[in-house]
Image (cartoon, rainbow, N blue to C red; front, top):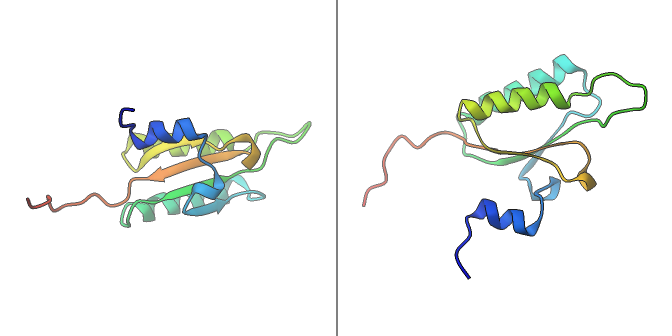
Length: 115
């Protein structure tokens, strides 16, 4: 059997969820400005730390309710991915509720590996 990249191996195993993440950012019940600020702070801090995985949990839609945090948080995470701060971004599996599984890139290694 050929070697699978870890990303594709995880695809075969199933979607990565809350239990697979190293930490959880729970934004359920948070107002939009607070949620965006919390996410921005997490992303900023991740630039100076070791890469890790985070499950970002959001409130699901309520009948007759307004906009959820899914789109604004998703846009913020996509922007971070374009900047290279996020290595992988996917939605949480349905059993974990609404949210994202995020692999943060962390601080880039400035010293090349000596061989």
